[in-house]
Length: 296
Image (cartoon, rainbow, N blue to C red):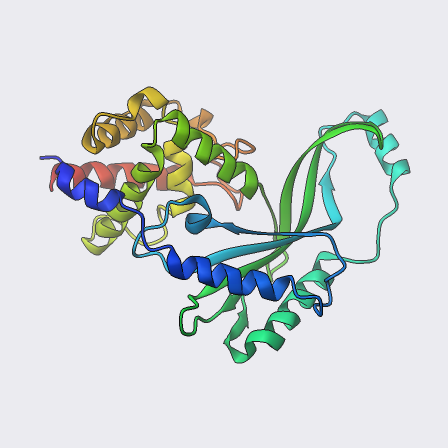
């Protein structure tokens, strides 16, 4: 027996966005303040995660905010030829301002504004909610460039992402703006069925955990978005039941080594990368979902 359309329709609905908008506006205003120690630095402030991608469900709470400075950047030149790397090395001089400096400035500024509700974490800076402001995670980051070509400062090409370091020194490179743009394009090409289907998978995942079908941490929302992003658009539509059944069956039968993250910068599955899913966890999720669906 499959999960009925009525239940899927409930799970497809977007959670509240009023408080998340207010939370983002409050934090963004703080980060843009003229008195901040990084006021003169070029920066980009944006939402990421479920609220940034309109895939939030009622159970979602934390608002994820990124502040990334473009005043400095880190790079990957491994795809360049030896000649191109030499040209790149001669074109730039390393600066004295670092990611650690920027993160400390952001953390201290948030503490000055929000006081003891600010708690720096392994990746992001947590701000406890108060009143209409929800809990939030602020991620300080810097621009990252993965170079495709470099002949000179005026003749080069690169993919732009962000990077940051965890407290144990692990470097994380990701591409949240590409993720968001690609998910929106997928949603449009799938005639508006993609994002509601993501919300169904997130809500059903939570029900699976509550019902003992799946353990916490096996199927993070980010990877569910990426998994579903790979399903062909012709599989979306008619009903939620058909959409979910068709896309999950396609994933089960697909060559999973070719599945991409929604940012299209990484393969979805990798045994060691900190920004990709483990193949065994995807299999565990698919097995659990099939059992959950059939036993409803």
